[in-house]
Structure formats: C-alpha cells, structure tokens
Image (cartoon, rainbow, N blue to C red; front, top):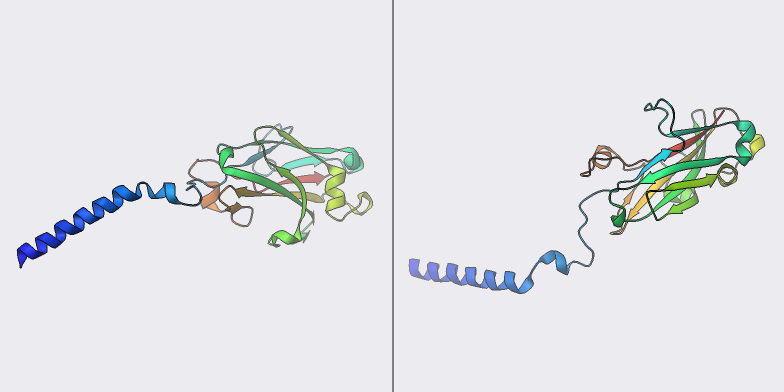
Length: 188
C-alpha cells in the first residue's frame, strides 16, 4: 500500500511540474498587467507659499477683486506616471461650512474642468472658468469663499483614486509619497 501512495505522489509531482512549465508565468496570461502601487500624484501651488504649512500647501490665495482675470497655477509630479491613465480635475464651491456639492458627492455631482495626462509640469486653469463651472458669478462670491479643485486619478488598470479613498493606505503608498486630493483657490 505504501508503494501505491508513493507512486501516486510521484505522479502528482510530475503532473504539477509539467503543468507549471506549460503555463509559464501566470501574470503574462492576465488580461491587464499587475500594478503594485497606488496613484502617486502631487499637485503643488505655484508659486509655493513662503512658509509652507499643512494648512497652506493646498491653497492658492487670490484677491476677490482680480479673480476674473486670475489663473490657478500648480505644478504636478508623479513617480509612477506610466501607470496613470489620467487625472481629472473637478471644481465645486465652498462657503464657510456649506459646500456645493457635498464633500462625499458622487462623481456625477461635480463639474470637470481639466484632464491631465502628462505629469511633471505646470498646469493652469483660468479662475473665471472655475467660477463659471462651479455655478457662480463674480457678483455672488464673497471673501473667504473657496473654489475647490479635486483630483481623481484613473490608473491604466481601471482603479480610481480620489479624496473619497485617499486614506493612509493610499497617502502612504508603497512609493512612500502622497496623493494630493485637492487644491483650493481662496478668495480674499
């Protein structure tokens, strides 16, 4: 009986070995490549604040009186740009604690203002476009209003990263870098 078990075990090892050699690397057979990292997308205000703090690294102050002719400028970078298909920028309006749309609004509740497909350069969006696409006019804006631009990164494998899922597992992704979920134009 023990000889029979040894024969079955040996046959199983041979069959398994032949199967592994025939199949090769299973990742080569997947319909999409395996991507290990989350989205690494950093957007920095341009110009950078003189003294960078956690509160001002995501804000671009613009005078309310010159907002119509101003430009929101920011610099992008990515360590895994080859894995990112695009980053969409959506705008919403924030007044005090009231925001339109709400922070957790679905993707259909925002207005697309720009799609970024190349990283490592300067991007610009006219503030007049942010005002119009947020459903506001210069006359309806007040000091300390924010035009919030949120970023949604779509990876080439279809995964999506945004402020809705940019918790510690994404912010501290394997690249050891951050994902910038938003930039605010603060009207002063």
